[in-house]
Image (cartoon, rainbow, N blue to C red; front, side, top):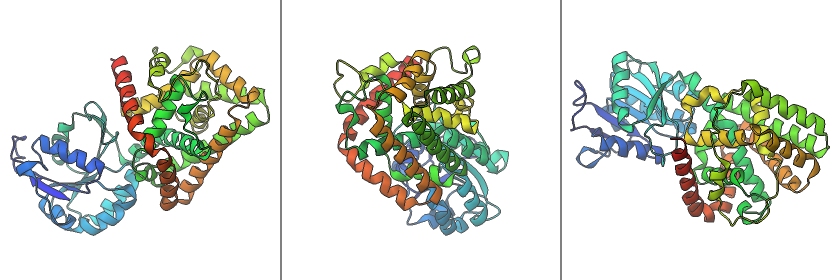
Length: 425
């Protein structure tokens, strides 16, 4: 916990403006370093480490709570009453509903509330990334001060309400996160590193594997807070499990016509028909480009896959009326990669038809699909019950299974992200 006073050139009227940070996890440290580099706080002579959050709250004109979503209520209840008179308070949790409720309940009435959320992880370059700003209870002057402080991140500011933020983060993250979490659980249950054989090879599979490993390389609470505390996310995760189950049953029972009709109906609803397709002229990702970023050696022959995880994603969006392109302003490189891999299957009729053929005629992936269905239903049940401890246990045991491969995967994944970003310029 820290608070510091800037000594560098700042906007007029903010020469003695003090910024405080409560919580020093990965995102908190990232904010501290970036603010310090801009002269606002937390660097060399500018930094003051204080004993507790009470002292931070008393000393600071702008306090940022950087704690887990599950802990925000407890932490604000503890330190909020000590907030300096007339100060501005915000948080950067991934779920704003409990954060705003905590601020309204435990902060003094004379305190203003401006929250934020950087829609990316702590290791991502902040420049050009979306930064949500929420003017919940504040004057224009106070809001402008917060913008002045955070402008050093070089992010693209997006202005939302707390409710809009939670809806959009659910739409862009909840279903895709649970899909890749379920992939990891399924591969773990089968005791396989998917890149070590001929079953998961090629551009689409490289994205699946790298995104799965990227998620499991993070801390468990990053995804638990969004999934469990965001009502929209809980509803979507439940539907994703239902979509996965329904499609798997159609595959298992060989009901080819029903499967095709359901998948094509979902495609047309989410992406539009061929005449009104919502995707850009150029695909978000290039399969040929992604072929280079596998973790294992590429075999001579590649087994075709039914892509149940991706079919269920679009079916889920269709059932809930979610249009993923509506939120591109808030999209991160990872979201565009997730959406791009879905696009890769659904915008190519031949590829989609091949996936549906494999789903009915080929049993190669049947056992993996069963484990995937179990995994999706397990995550949904955990979220529905609101069990953070169960989430943590489910996450960590699979994290430990893949942990020895994280350094290599991180290197390959970063190279893949860089290549994709350069290809979009």
